[in-house]
Amino acid sequence: MPMEKPFSQACENNKGPILEVLKKHFRPCSHILEIGSGTGQHGVHFAPALPHLIWQCSDMPGNHAGINAWIDEAPAHNLKRPVAFTIGQHPWPKGDFDGVFSANTAHIMQPQEARLMMELVAHNLPKGGIFCQYGPFNIDGRYTSDSNRSFDESLRNQGYGGIRDIGELQDWAVSKLQLVERLAMPANNFTLVWRKV
Image (cartoon, rainbow, N blue to C red; front, side, top):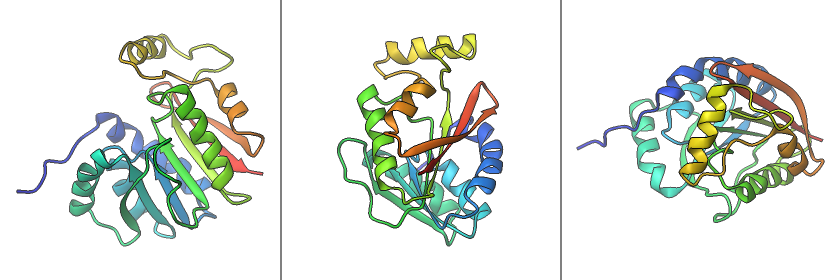
């Protein structure tokens, strides 16, 4: 029996607006690492729309079956099955990645894990490499909406690290990643576009 695919309504809602950003900023890239592929919905949507690049999914092993179920149903020549990558547990995946994408990961990580993610991306991207990071973020220590404040409280009550501040991420980028764009997205989220300097 085929596995029932996991589903995220948020992924369905945000995949279109995110893709428009990726079409612009990943244009010069050839090999993308997705950190935290989650259900797999983003990968199966983005890879066929970005046929000039290879899209490598990654996540903790427990999520691989769900990601593979999506890939089985919607395979693409440039979409690679997930590799094991849990921040703080697995080494940086093998591959000549000149771009990284991650959606809705920083706020479910503990602060030290989010910091390590920024440091790993900063260290492993080549000069000129692009990191597109999507999710809810605070600005100058403030929530951008009441709904984000409530969401952050809910996250912390569940034991997650909570919404990170953009300034905090910039500090963690260890002067190697420059924030080149901060794009407002639907549902009080942002896409942060970083470039390796």
